[in-house]
Length: 233
Image 1 (cartoon, rainbow, N blue to C red):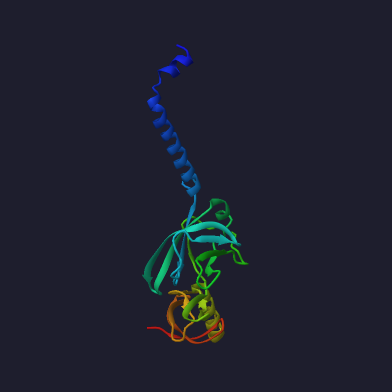
Image 2 (image 1 turned 90 degrees about the vertical axis):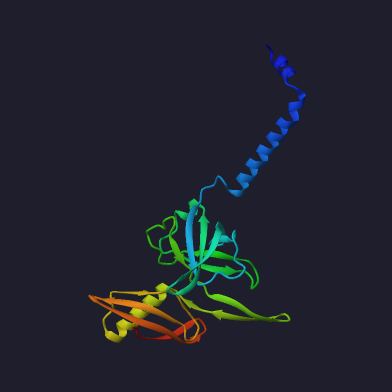
């Protein structure tokens, strides 16, 4: 049987349904390609003291000003340092493979009321070890809060934050000066936000001995956080 004969045997009533199926299939495939359904991403978790009211799912994740991923979900958890926000990120695999294990991050906003985004920061002393998928990164951001709006004047409170790693390093340096012997390690419960009377608990190990300290913010001078530390319970 010839090709022409086979075509003549197809009832024209099927042409419209077949065309509709083809159009729907092409539209669905285009939408899936546009949304990145077939694109592979590497997971990453960002823990922050708070992510702000305007941080939403789908927020951009940038590296050196270029978008390399997005926020997939935002949750909350309560730990030793109090309530924190936990952001799940998905990062493009190509830039991800160059990220160091000591990667840092900040939550930024171009304007006071604008949508926030996650800014990935490669430190100057980048580790030669690469970041692994599913790793947890702690935000080192300085929180900007809008307290009141009066006419066209906005009053902003800029709250400096010492990250957990910075608190641990600072405490080790202070103890080394005071005792003339640097402890082996320090482990603190979380970040220290620059508000007077805020506290964080740390555990210091020196040889076989372990000691607890409570750090309390005394004063804040610009970006500088002054604190005292006393033996813990």
